[in-house]
Length: 509
Image (cartoon, rainbow, N blue to C red; front, top):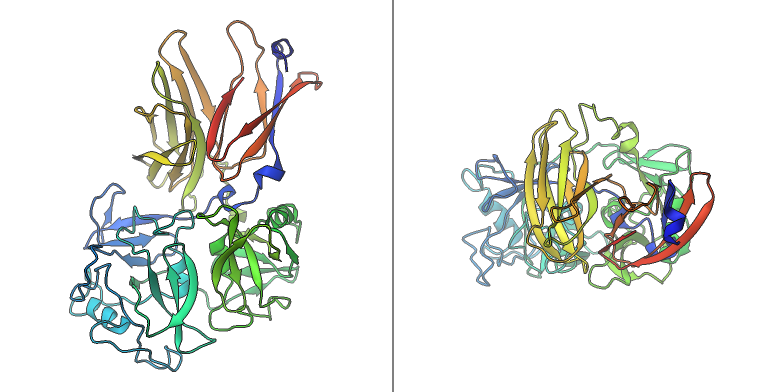
């Protein structure tokens, strides 16, 4: 595309290649994940708090124990010590599947729970318990390893295995655990010593496990997810992403390949071979199914769920596994485009923007508005370099329907991209400015969706004005970009091709 061809107004069509971009991955959908630090008395603490005793999961309502003193020394007089290891034991035969496990002398899981609940209890509560395997899996972080946990909220998390309360249906001498090195899930003999983390309270689940909608879909009232009832067959991972994105079923076209947590939520650990109720999913196989979540250690692998028993592991993306599509039925009645809405779902909203290096009079800033009239929002702005490494993190609080503006990453000297995490939906602008000559400030509106196709208005080019495009690729795959210029009459005038590396940002004119 020559400069001359851009001297009149028109539109720029920017499109990334689906063959490389692999749209439909975990990163392309906003996932609810929101935590609050709690003091010993249960009061809320700011995100920036240096010490805290408990963590509340704002989505599930569960309250988690915080571990302490990861110094390599066991101390069983302190049940919060991260180095302690316990055998699995529960004298209640009904809940332990007929085998109480392996009793220890102060070092079994029953001893651990009893110590927490002694007297007035840990942080004033006496209803602490071991989490189920489903609950424990929900606090894993698939984008991290060693440990696979949100360490900003769960510090001192051991890289080792953590017991759950769930007994293996296939072998009553085993119980399920989560391996927090990678976030894999398996079962092991109760005599083995593993780490533990206690939990309490939580949102009550509906007694109705599944609802057959009689239109080829099944709804889980506990998760709010709507599932494809029939199997989609076996295929490679890239094909499974395309299949789910293009699926039209029961009048809906917003299907996607489930992420790891969504897929695991289908597993029923009270049954096996398969661990999914055939009354609602008659075609389910005791086989392995794809998730959309890439394995963070090896990008060529992806997380899998085995519906024989609910085991979670990783496998190669080029191998063939089974597929079942999902959509979020809870979003049907939520209008996120209404700026005057009084109520929004509480969760973590994600926004992605490029930033450009400071220095030489150039700066990148944000002007943000909290679109929720009823609640304040906490922000976490994380800046990444072109390799995806987190360089800096800033925390902000914006009052209900309030605004804030600030410069980002003032000390950084390389370009990259930033992620804005918010508990409430935002609107606003990113600013690219220069206080050297010539003076410049460009406004970049942002939205919460990633896209493979953008249509951008173009202002005529002359000695004073031009159109500059800034774009980031916050995914773990390189993407190719086709930039096509169409004049105001709708006639294509030229096309340019670009490549954006994984986790990088570029600017071009």
